[in-house]
Structures are given as C-alpha cells and as structure tokens.
Length: 79
Image: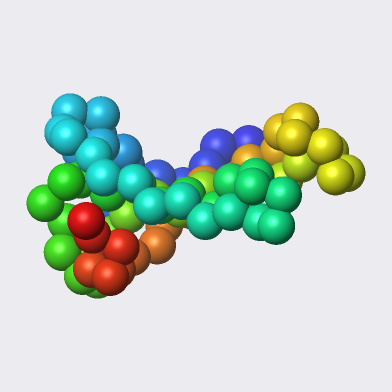
C-alpha cells in the first residue's frame, strides 16, 4: 500500500532539517512533555510548524508513543 504524497509536510520537514529552529513545549502535571511545536526560527504567527504529541506508559516517564502532525506557530510563544 502506498501513501499519497503530502507536499506541504515534506517541504516543512526539509526546511526544518536545514534551518535554525524554535521550539515550544507544553507539560502535564508530572512535568512530562505532552505536546511540542517546532518551527523555523523566523516563523511568524500562523505559519506552518510541526506538532508532536507524546503518550507515556501509565503515570511513568517512559515514552510510549508519539505522533507528528501539521499545525501553526503562535507568536505568543516567541521569546
């Protein structure tokens, strides 16, 4: 079974490989990263970024699974 190409996602991944990045992380009550956003350093509000969601084994800090998807950067996250 072949997957259809996702040109927008492919272009963003290629850009992230060759540029400086900025990252925003969100944590749960146990200080585990549950969501991470990655964008090129000069991304502005609303530009495409990669969102990664993390799942853990029960209440442990052992990472069980992760899923990447397309999202948009928010300028409120800039430092």
